[in-house]
Length: 576
Image (cartoon, rainbow, N blue to C red; front, side):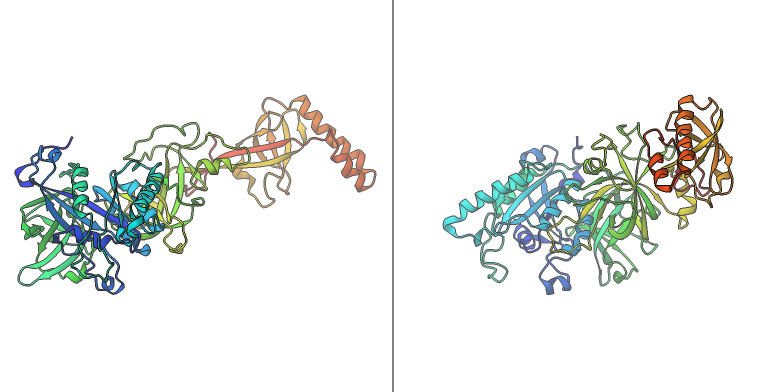
C-alpha cells in the first residue's frame, strides 16, 4: 500500500498519457482539459506546428480537488499531468520513452474511424507499460445529430470487443468533442463532454507507487535558458529523488552541474521524487547541447554496448523473430539498431521459474535460431511438443552505445516497415538485466555467457573391423582433422555405444572402438550388405544397385552429438 503523503507532497502529481492515431485529436483534447500549460506543451516545436502534429512529448496539466479515495491519504490537490504522446508513426520511439512514466493511459479514438494502426500500437505499448486505461471517443460532433447516439453505442461495443482479450477489458469508454468544428473552427466553440471526462479521470486516479530511493534519473523533454537565471531542464523523474544543491550529471555529455533552483508547475520546491514533473535550473550550461535526454545522479547511468534482456514476443507482430536479425531497440530514452540472439534454458528445465530481476551467468543456456512460440513448435515436422520455455532471453548487440538504467523497459520494433501497411511494428519487449560496458565486450564479456548449440552429425558403418571395432564413413569431410574428434562418444543405430579412436586411411574414414563388442545382429546386417555387394559386383552395375537396395542390406548409422559454446574462443566440443 502507498504511504500517506507528507505536507510537502499534498499535491499529488498523476501522469496521464494521451495516446492515439495521428489526427485523432489528442492535442485538442489536452488543450481542452488543461489550464496550466507546461513548457513543452501544445506543439511548440516549429517542425510540429508546420506539420500540424505533435512531434514530441508535450506536457500540460490541470489541478482539481481530489476525489474522496485520495483525500484520505492527505492529498489536498490532484494535479493531472497530461503527456501528449505523438501519433506520427515514425515517432513511436518517443511514445515508448514516455510510456514508462505514465500512471493512466487515455486512448483517443476518432469515433468516425475507429481503431487504426497506431491506436493498436498504442494499445500494445499500454499493455506493456501501463495498468489502467480509459478510452475517449473523440470528434462526436462530426456524426449526424439524428444518428449520433446509435453510432457512439456501436463504436463503444466495437471497442469493448477489441479490448476483450487485453488487460484493459471492461475499462471505461467516454465520448467527447474536444474541438467542435475541427482545427479551423473559432476558439469560441465550446468543447463537449470535457467536465464528464475530468470527473472520470478523478475517479480513476490512484496513489501511484513512488519510490524516492535509489539513484535519481529524469527524462528531460525540453531545455531553454532564462536570462540572468541559467538553463532550465524540464522533465519527469523516472526514479529516485533530487534536492536543491545536489549535483546532477548529463551522461550524454559527461558533465555534472549543481541544482540552483527547482520548480513544479511554476511553484518553487526544495525536493522532488519519482513521478514528479519538474524544472531544474543549472548555471553555465548551453541549452542547445541538450534538447532531450537523461539527467541523473553522477556515475549512476551506464553506457552499454550490449545487453542481456528477458524477452517476450508481442503477439500482434506477424512472422517469426530470428536470431541475427536487426531491430530498432528502444531503451531508456534512446532508440538504436541492434542485432539479437535468442536463448533459453535447455530441456528438461524449460518450465522452471526464473528470477525476473537478475541473470545467472553460472547456468548453461540453449541457443535458439528464433524466438520459440506455439506456432514455431507446431511448424516442426513432429508437431507441437509442449517445448515452449517458460522464460526466454536475448542478447542485444547495439550499433552504437546507449546510456540507460538497469531493469529498464526494452522494446524491439521494425520501424522501417511501411507506416501505411496495416501491421504492428512492435516485435518484442523485455527488461534489461545485464549490460556490457566494455567496448571490447566480445572478448571480455561474452565468453562469460554460456550459450551452447547442439551439434548432430551422422555417418555410416562401412564394415566391421573386429569384434570390438568398426570402420565408419560419411561423418567427416576428407579434409577434416579427425584428431580433434578422438575420444568423443558415438552411438550406432543398432544401440552400441563407442568412441572415435582415430582416422582410417586418407578419405575421411575413421575407426570406432566398441567396448561392449559389436552385436551379432549388427554383424549380420553389415555382413548381409557386404555379401550382396560382392555378389552383385560380378554382374552389371544396374543389378548391383538393385541388390544393394535389397531388403536385407540395411545401413547402420553412426551418430555423434556434442555441444559447442557460441562464445568459446577455443571452440571446444563438449559431451555431457
